[in-house]
Amino acid sequence: GNSVTQMEGPVTLSEEAFLTINCTYTATGYPSLFWYVQYPGEGLQLLLKATKADDKGSNKGFEATYRKETTSFHLEKGSVQVSDSAVYFCALSYNTDKLIFGTGTRLQVFP
Amino acid sequence: EPEVTQTPSHQVTQMGQEVILRCVPISNHLYFYWYRQILGQKVEFLVSFYNNEISEKSEIFDDQFSVERPDGSNFTLKIRSTKLEDSAMYFCASSQSRGPNTEAFFGQGTRLTVV
Image (tube, rainbow over all chains, first blue to last red; front, top):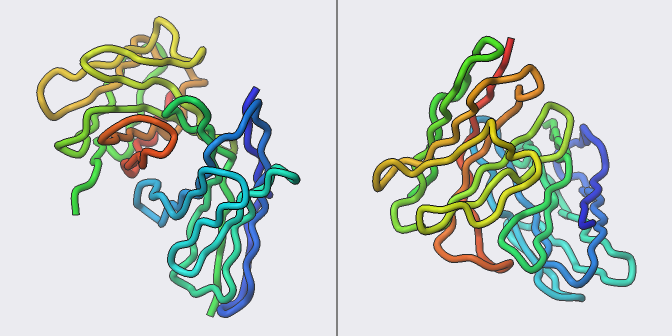
């Protein structure tokens, strides 16, 4: 079946460090891929998405590229800030509006 | 900015009791969802709801669960007789349309603890 695997957290970084959060997926076809973010005390918010192979989603300095050959959608940011501290969820949807999520990765950024 | 709101933020209940988790979706949205996350596990889809009926449900969503849109604004999830393993964070979501490119807007979640 369709599934998403994310790297376990927490990921702890100093401000201005480079961030990568790995996400790989298993799907029977070509799903749409998403990154959601949950800031403390808030709901899940869509951060970025990509709907076909080689698409790059980007928002707020974050980027992720849909890699069909490696079935991956890794999240990257060149220089993280303390305000980026949150839980990040990778997700996919395929032929439905149902989202299939990973476990989430907690990011902690220290000044 | 419109948002999905959930109440309560935390609910503690005894095993075997009924609980109702409440959600107010964004007002012009037509599609509604419940997800849950057991601590340390993945966020799991429970059910989607459109036009006053369930459009899709997961195998988790058994006869103990039900959803309702009792009025024009609320969307509720009822667990008839709670079990310890129902302890989780429950997320409500809504969207304006459906399809894999649609953005779903999520609430902040209700943490349910069954003791």
